[in-house]
Structure formats: C-alpha cells, structure tokens
Image 1 (cartoon, rainbow, N blue to C red):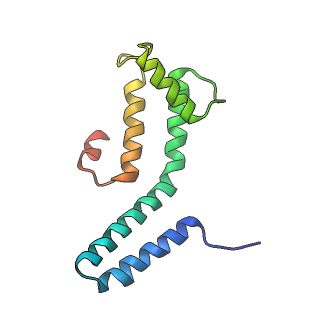
Image 2 (cartoon, one colour):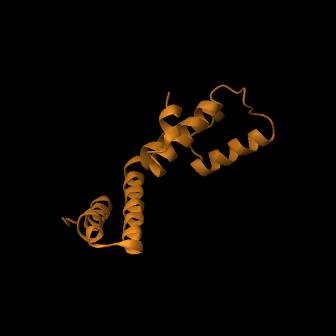
Image 3 (tube, rainbow, N blue to C red):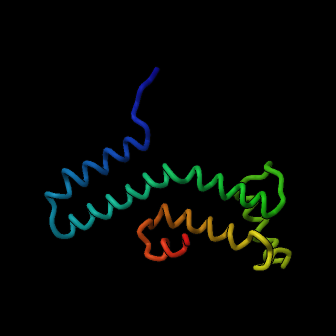
Length: 124
C-alpha cells in the first residue's frame, strides 16, 4: 500500500507553514500576500471538504425540481433549468425553485466567504 498524504493534508500543511512560520516573519506587502495565500488555501480546504456534499444536494435539487432522471450531468440539469426559466416554463411561483436557488447559492458562499455578514441572516 502506498501511503501518502491526501490533497487536503498537503494543502493544510502549506497553510500551516504560511500561518505559523513564514507570515510572522514578514512585514508590509509580503505579509499581505502571505495572508492572501493563507486565505486562498483556506478556501481550497473548505472546497475539498464541502463541495462533494454541496454538489450532491444541488444535483438532487435539480432532479426534483425538473422531475428529471439521474442520467444527466449536473451541468446538463443546470442548462435545462436555465432553458425552462427562459422559456417561462419555470417561474418564481414554481414550488421549490427559490429554495433550490437559495440553498445552492448559500452552499457556494459557505465555501467562498463563510464569514459573509449576510450568510447568517440568509440561513434563517
């Protein structure tokens, strides 16, 4: 068995190095770039952890909303939703549409900007 660190472990190790070793020794513009790098790596870690569940929920929401079979890709389902909205077949009054769009958007914000001030309000 080939035992190697996971992608998540590798990213976490680099983030830890930046946060604990490199950044404290930096000042000015270099310190700013270290914080940017650390924040980017934190986003990657959240993405690795949360994306699979978020995509599964999005996919199931699309299947339910469109009453579709599960043999289409998520991209195809999203395209079908867009086309049906443009054609007026699905509207704001369609049961489940707003909930699906809100949940999908919130899942992405939770990965990209989990401290976004409106996220807590939107979860209510």
